[in-house]
Each structure stands twice: as C-alpha cells, then as structure tokens.
Image 1: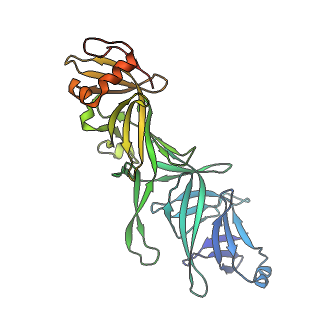
Image 2: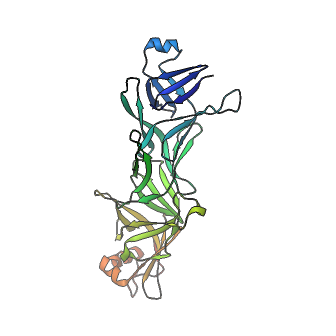
Length: 334
C-alpha cells in the first residue's frame, strides 16, 4: 500500500514499503475538482517507479484556520486507518463568483521556486451561522467555511480578512479577500448579497432589522446579525449598515439606491403599504414582489416628501387625491 505526503518543499512524496520517492512536479485541479500531481520527471524515472504522467487523488476538500488548502484522502480499503491528508503550501488569492482560487508554492530538486494558481469550482453560500462558505462541486460536495467575521467596506462590498504566516519568511501578515456583488432584500429576516457574474453564488444571511422604523434622512438600512461566530461566543450581535438614498420615480417606483463605487449604482426595489402616523408623517411598510411584508417601515415627513418630489409620485401611484395629496392606506406595487 502506497502512502502519500507533501514535504517541506511542496513536493509529492510516495512511501513504497521501505522506500520514499520524492517527485518533482506541480499540483493542479481537473474539471471534476480532483487533485492532480503533474510529474516533471524523465520517462525512464517514471518507468522505474511504475508511474504515468500524473498522480490523481480522490478525497474531501477542507481548509485550515490559515486558509491552507487540504485534501483528506479517506480510509484504507482493508481497515479503518486513515490514509492521511495532503496539505498544500497555499493561500487564497481570489474569490470570484463561482470559483475559489489558491496560490500554491513549491521548490524542485534544483532549488527553483514555483508558483501555480489552482481553482476549485462551485458556489458561495452562507451557512446557519452566517459564515461565508464555498461548496465544491462534486458528486458528494465538500463545504469549506471561512472562519471568523466578515465586514462591509466603504463600497458596500463584503470583505473577509485572515492572518497568514508567510510561506518563506514565516512572518504573519493580514490577507484580504473582497467579494464583488450587490445587496437585495426580498424576504423578512433575511439579507442577501448576490455575487456579480454568478447565477448560483449568493449569501443569504439570517438577520433582524435594526429598527422597526427608519428615517430616509439618515440614508441607511440597519440590520443585526451574528457573522461567523457561535451564539454562545458572541458578546453582541453584529450590525450591518447599507447606505443609500430613497428614490421615487415613474419608471423605477419606490426603491433604495446604493452606490457601490466606480460608477456602479444599483437599486433595491420595494412594494409598500402607505399610512399616516399620529404625527401625520407618511409611513411605508415595505413588501417584496410577492406583496409579503419585510418587517421594515420607512417614515417620511411631509417636508421630505415635498423636497424629494415624492408627493407627485404618490398621487400617480394611487390614482386618487386627498387633502394631503396622499391616498392613505394605498398599496404601491413594484
């Protein structure tokens, strides 16, 4: 029975009975997300050890607390003993739509350094603890979780940071991963971040609205959630702010417009039930495109409505006119 490992130079080692074979080559991943070691050895050397152009592995993908990529090889056929695992000297460098890209380092017998990029394909999702996870596309999918909390940057993108020990220097440095996408609110107690250019990667976070009523002058939507930390370990809920401005128009209806930087502007559209409160302010109870309530209300003063041109929008949508210019109890669809 052969046993496989990776040495300190990032090369594949094969243990054959009482002999250890050190192989020059490079790791890669095939279309089925299987790990492959492409041998860079003479044909005579391959024949000597009964090897072909590459060595292929099946197993379960995982990452450690420093985001090194690792493949657990399973168990021996003749017993319960584990075949071990292959941990690649690597770091995450890209988190594009439906891929997770690692930079892998190695050194050959001549001391030459090699750097390769390898990609896993699958989908990004959020788990029940609101962690960022990547599901590797396989017959039996593997789920890789990024431990720790994520943040929202000034361009309203999700940012994940982790500490990494340098592959050469041994010094610790902070690595930053940025997920490019846009926010959406389509269900009660759920906040969604959809990755750009993807039809399947999205983070559906479990949340609670920060306040039952918001004021448009503040230009933000506030949510409470616990991101990446167990409930019993969390001193207080994480707060996520979405910044933007409320818009009224004949073509777009009622929406919250967000600026994602570099000229990228996108609006979250809402339906709403409209009423007056005791202060004669106008309150919009937000709904999704199925007319289901979202548990969020936005309160507008008459002065704000007049300055923003929203009164004319409301008259247009309701089709009727009252003394205040607003049909109370009206429904504003998408």
